[in-house]
Length: 141
Image 1 (cartoon, rainbow, N blue to C red):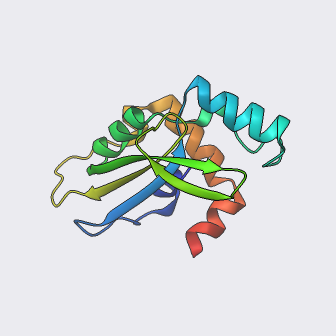
Image 2: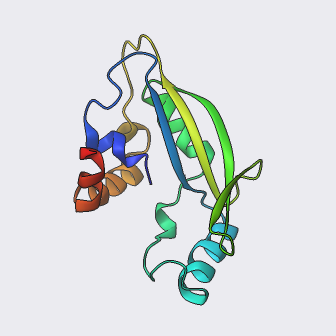
């Protein structure tokens, strides 16, 4: 989940009007059925244990986290994966996967951190991401 890059990266969005692009999985029953049950356990598209449904985030929650950290969400669009062709497609449907584009506000007097806005949930997500070596490698790129 790319939202964690903000919490672990430190200064990724230091410039006003800087863009942040996030792709993630929505927290719905459909995303659980297709993202975990089908893609991991039935079809084997990804290894078992790749996804943790409790860490999925809805577009509304993501928007709240971003806005509480001085970003303005510009676009949220659904993404659909076709396992037969191996291609992703844009969609109006955000019930499975979605992408968001947010822009850092020019001036923010007293930012409210995501830790404050969603204390328990965000602390757990950041703890898991910041200890994950893959996240750190991705941030170095």
